[in-house]
Image (cartoon, rainbow, N blue to C red; front, top):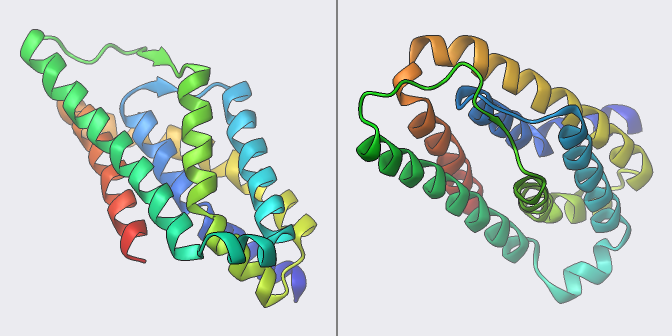
Length: 186
């Protein structure tokens, strides 16, 4: 039962990683294998720390506050994507999205990893209070994060850009923005 609880917790905590993967894939921005490992490592470390120190953290910062901070970071990322797209379209209105865009910079990956981790602190605290084992949840978080980001990128790159090629940047920003807004109210 402990394994099933951990898996369900980790899947729900990593749905935002899937959304991020789809967003980046739609923009044809590649998260490299090393970058994916960085995100998964920071996410699993954050899960372990938040679950291990659940009672301490809950005394210092409420799960609601942690969720709000993570949500605002995601909202700002989404707005950045949308505004960058609008700015670039004004400069180059006729230019299509190139087939191979760019790799994500490690600074961007680090900030994204922190946003995803901070956003899940509240869930980590709640899961530890509910009795889910921190080490099991952390290892599962690592694996699911790797899978969700890679699968999300592939889906976003293969499916969404063929349908909405001209609107990929705005779509990606909108997904991240909506995710941040949704997380803010949950």
